Amino acid sequence: MINAILRKIPIRWGSDTMGDVMLDGGVAFDNGGTRRACSTVETLDRLQPLLERFGITRVANITGLDRIGIPVAVAIRPASKSLVVSQGKGATLTDAKVSAIMESIELHHAERPHVPVRIASLHELRREGSAILDCAAMPRTLASGFDEQMAIAWAQGIDLTGGAPCWVPYGYVDVDDSLSALPVPIGIPVNSNGLASGNVRDEAILHALFELVERDAIALWHLADEEVRQARAVDLSTLDDPHCRVLVDQYDRANVDVHVFDLTSDIDLPVYQVFIRERGNGDRDAFSAEGSGCHRWRGIALSRALTEAAQCRLTHIAGAREDLVHDDYAATSERLAQIKRYLSLTGGPVRPFQPADKTDPGSAETFAETLSQTISALQAVGIEQVVAVSLAPEDLGIHVVRMLVPGLEGLVFEPGYVPGARARALLKAQRARA
Image 1 (cartoon, rainbow, N blue to C red):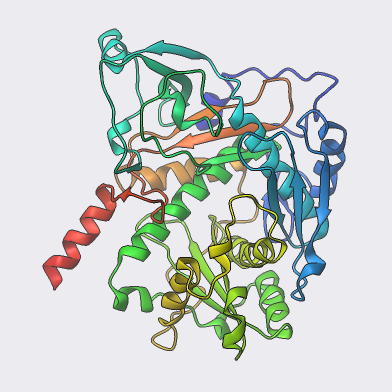
Image 2: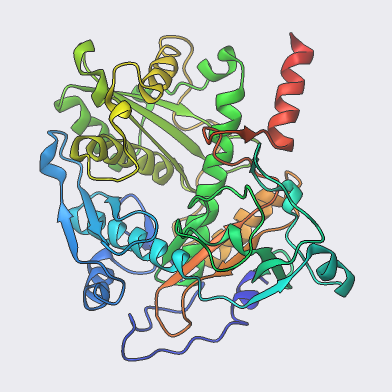
């Protein structure tokens, strides 16, 4: 049914596009640590002629700024209305370049969403009987406010649980940091959580959903009691995924310690958090970093976390991202203090990488099957809406989506973050046990 819903949107291929890679729902290409609709070599070949269109002036390899050797690249977009510098990582330099370019393309389209928009109040939409995003269940901050009588901009998406159009506040899909010409509610968190791109629709949607589940799991783990968090440490001697083993060995050869935690929540999708730290050298704590990853395949989830940790470390070494400030490098910074608190959880009980009662899906699982299983996993914990908002023109050949899933926790470290229903239930249960 999911594939039928997605096919409601026609695709037209023009000369200034990536071209037709494959039909949605096809078997994913094993890309070594990830699953894509085609190889990254093919994707990069298709992307190169389009860089100017997206304002990307440079794609650079910054791997050599560090000694670990896990490939990291950056894409530079000087006229950006959000972040000028986008990072990418992967098993190969080509993977990293594609990752950086696609992240930059995502932001390009989220700054100027190509979506149906209307101006109306929440009250008007309800009176019409229109399907509306459950804004009350979306992540919010202390500054959030919503006047039901205020006319605001709405973008149209599709609820993948049933295929019906669904209106969402425009502020949830726009990441333009400049003054918006459209009226939006005060306090909607402006971030890229749930923003993703792909060679085909299903690939982009899955990437975004995995990110949302990942952030939800991080929030719940962060708010959990120390004993619960500590019990999630993974025994790396049980790591049997060959690709992840190579990455861990790269860190080891660079004298960088790796600590892994299994953050998988009641949503049946593997989530890992990785922390890296210079071995036996407290003077180099500024080079500590973290990464996280989620996927239906356990090895891919951990691979994403391992490579993201290397990317995070190199991002701070390069210092080019404009959202980094001097205090981020101080020994007393909140970022480093947080990592130290998490690293203090190591040394206790550990769990195996592959739980005895869990197995990965078969390698022949299609994108459509993976998407169906992922939505089912969300519905199993009470999620009712899974809304996809397509941000790119139909004829582009690159699919950019913003996924919105009311009920999932958001970025727990965002200033003024207000715990959602899942976090409140966790905190209530912990108080009852105390």
